[in-house]
Amino acid sequence: MTEITRVPLQPIAKGAVSKLWIGIAAIALASAGVAYAALPPTPTVKTLTAGTGESPTMDDVVLINYKGMLSDGTVFDQNKNYPNPVAQFVLGFSKALQKMQRGGKYEVIIPSELAYGATPPEGSPIPANADLKFEVELIDYKSLAEIRQQQQILQQLQQMQQGGAPGAVPGAPAPAQP
Image (tube, rainbow, N blue to C red; front, side):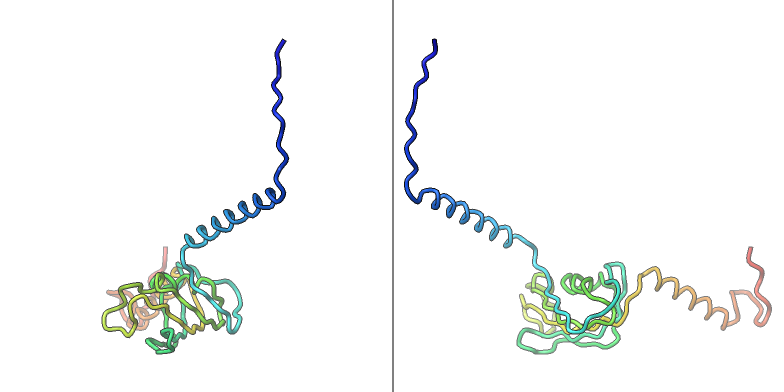
């Protein structure tokens, strides 16, 4: 016959369960804070005037109006009708453009880690580790494939205006295409 030893359970002290839950909550909050601090920085994009349609991707070329400023309001760069591939801007600007829509106007804050960090362009008024503020209007955008196709069409039109293909007689009909 097996003998079972009984151990009397002690009553839980008053308030111990509350302290346990407070401890669990504190650990959860600390873990969330550590996880939040580990998130990569992102640009802040505030919509001033809503745009329409889809947003550009890293494979697109945008046409924008923009004004870049330091946190004290000093303008360091501005441009109108500026065409540029999304992927060729500083990372924070590229990420911000992908949150915009055609025709919209935006205010963008780019943390220094996503701009120039400790090494701003030589001779620029941007200090090291500066957060940047931009006012951006996304006028339009097109894919690189669309732009290449338009360039080919323009080149063909120019060749036709200049007398056709190399070796062709000006004014002669173009040869039939196979």
